Image (cartoon, rainbow, N blue to C red; front, side):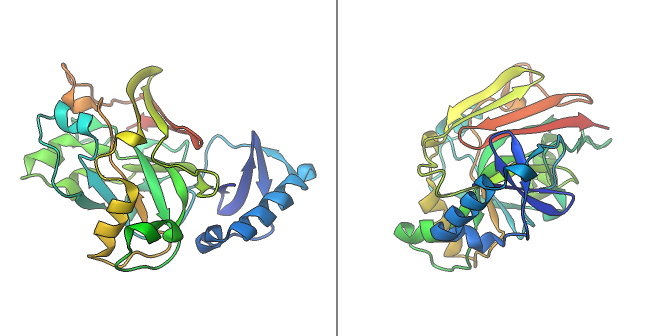
Length: 272
């Protein structure tokens, strides 16, 4: 089941069709497999309501906390000349940066090193603290695509101010929709790809993460309480702009298409 928002109303996505739901589905409902099956049956039997998928969507959920994981692919560590971390590197990104599929990424006038990062995002569906690795699946509602847009000049200039460099307005494209966890049975084996103006910039698989999803959720929940609507974006593979020779930074008019297997494609264009 894929769930999206358009003009604050929730829709199910069935192949290339959009189906308005009778009422919005709370994120915790995606933890219930029987509920999800009933919802899928409702959508299947509502073909008279099918619409075309809009080109611009709202974010697929109301985000609570945005929690990122730094340097979580061996290849990304290598391209930066870094050693793989001994423990997950966790940072936060402002929820005010969130935008949906098809919305513009605004390039601030004060930023000269604007970069992209494709990441698999995990959506938390239930409140939890001290979550054991073998219990993690009970807390995951689903998955989506996240683009960790970063102002590298701000991120690195002020003694590694990750929060500042990653929290400008529109720097958190997410979507296009949430895919429930029953549809994605193995989140650690998904191909992901970033295209910039049609050219492949990143291509990898989530199996290459250093710290897998159970490790990340266990690590984070030992520090803070996870809540429904929290989003954990799990790190990016090699191919980001600032590590290239010469560097490739985003500019006005650039088109970003980020794809993850079994989820879809998140599309955004850079604007000023």
